[in-house]
Length: 125
Image 1 (cartoon, helix red, strand yellow):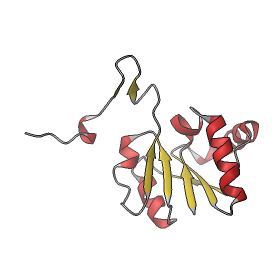
Image 2 (spheres, rainbow, N blue to C red):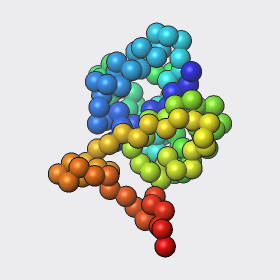
Image 3 (tube, one colour):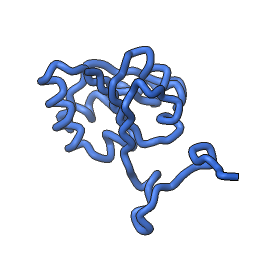
Image 4 (cartoon, rainbow, N blue to C red):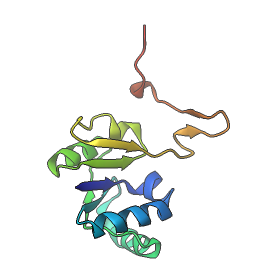
């Protein structure tokens, strides 16, 4: 199985969960990909942070923009993609199971509801 993990808003929000998940996935022979829309020059900082959290991975993949993550999910035959941003999830094909991670940027914890952008909601009118 190939599993892609977004960095910002996903791993950074729940590092303990993703440590446990990544260690278990790698131990079972699965591939873990850190799929991020950060600039590749920031890789050393990310490597250091992932090591501090104990998160295991096989490779990094840097996307050129949010929608580019769907391209990489298809190209790398990603089976499961953990991500927090609708713009990244919406173009992903049905071949890949998407797991949306909630955080303060996409979920209103006070009112207990998802926050949506106009591009992520279908209008009935």
